[in-house]
Image (cartoon, rainbow, N blue to C red):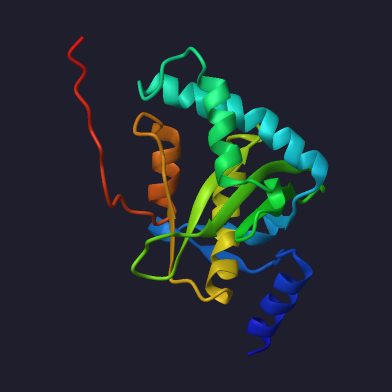
Length: 189
């Protein structure tokens, strides 16, 4: 029971950083202590929006969902409609992904999933800053999120990934995520 109390204390402090390893898919263990999920600062919010809005617009253009003209403005408008109060929007949780050296290496955004038959959390975004990619921080963040989600009473974690993003799809599969819906398109022009 002391383990549960320890996690609850960490949740109340807004920071979950433990030395307990987390088990992920395919029998691989990743140390949860490699990162901590800390409350997002105003500076981190600014950096995240500066990175994520153009990246989301580029993703939508790349997969053919949006025309390039006006894509970034559309991405910014979408973000504003989802988060009218920015990082303070009720029901949404933003965390800085911080490495062992205390450096912010990314951002994690999650919220309760709407319309789910089971109590689920939806990861709206997980961004590892480019200089820190390929070092296991994304996997560690997913691992560190699991006890937070469990302690909040949720049974599942869901997310969306663009179909052509094989790196992210492989990460999520190896972390135990399974595809539940697949949309496909055939371009005739």
